[in-house]
Length: 366
Ligand SMILES: Cc1cc2nc3c(=O)[nH]c(=O)nc-3n(C[C@H](O)[C@H](O)[C@H](O)COP(=O)(O)OP(=O)(O)OC[C@H]3O[C@@H](n4cnc5c(N)ncnc54)[C@H](O)[C@@H]3O)c2cc1C
Image (tube, rainbow, N blue to C red; front, side, top):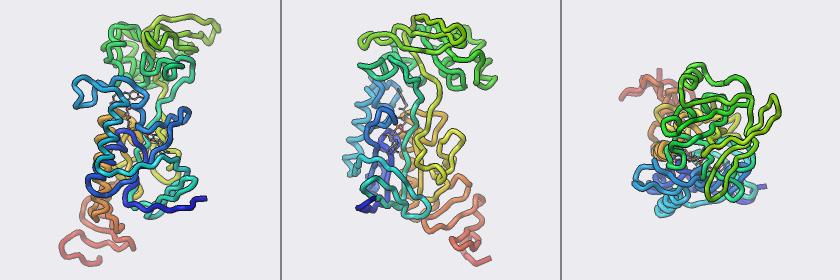
């Protein structure tokens, strides 16, 4: 039972690149944001700092000519957010009530009441759960095992090497095709004898001479040492039960992502996979005053820089909303904190009690 209520104008959920960028902007705008982050939990794949805490080299975040280690980058993000007065709270939010403003967020001991909510809870890569996949010392995560080809494919450890991609959907075909730019050869290991990927993605992969398929097969273990990284994988043929060792220098697990949105089911609009729906022109969700940024609303790009970019957008959207300015909604309407809806053609304003008035200088009831 909650025994304390904290009131805020801006609450941010999640401390990855999106949440921390939203914190930097809202803190600099004097909105005194409270950033709530889930404690580190290996099973739920949450970690203060987000997904980049489990990787090593980040070579594509602008501003770091020599690259930077993921945890170090996130430390810098956090320092910058702290510098402008962001307040941090480590807590599990077990329930949210977004039915009216102020919105209510509940932990086991505290209720947080907020005028605006910025959701930056990210998405978690799905993993196989096999030996060798986890972080060192139990595995080689960040040292030969990845869930992001765009992020890690160009790293020296994978260049001109034999790589394995696991999966049979669009993501796996995309990852495999991308990796052929750098790798000597890419083997797609799939547990069935046909792919789930769309025809166009399949055709692209089949036509690529650097891609080969290992059908009806699963990965049982990733082999190597923490010092040298991945040296191979142990495979099992599902038809014969036969096991074999296959030499490779890297494994890309491409079996999908799960956006961290369970908390918002039934309250916020999501796509079939669970990604939050936002307006094309803002980070507004279907509930006025609730904004979403980063991987939690982006099934396409999923990069630190795009997460940071939308984190900035969320902060500016929240600021506009609190300043009584209209913010674009997924429906195409714009909405103000007073609950006025401006129609997509900007010709009319619908007041909270349902009256429609023309959006002109001389407003009259119609
Ligand atoms: C192995 C790996 C390597 C990568 N390398 C690169 C790279 O080189 N370059 C690049 O640009 N991108 C890279 N990425 C992708 C990049 O990490 C993500 O695009 C980025 O972190 C997304 O940022 P985010 O803020 O949206 O979410 P995340 O970084 O996922 O952060 C989400 C935050 O929300 C918190 N959270 C989750 N659920 C809750 C909850 N219920 N309540 C409170 N908090 C919650 C988590 O603890 C976490 O702090 C990599 C990803 C992985 C997995």
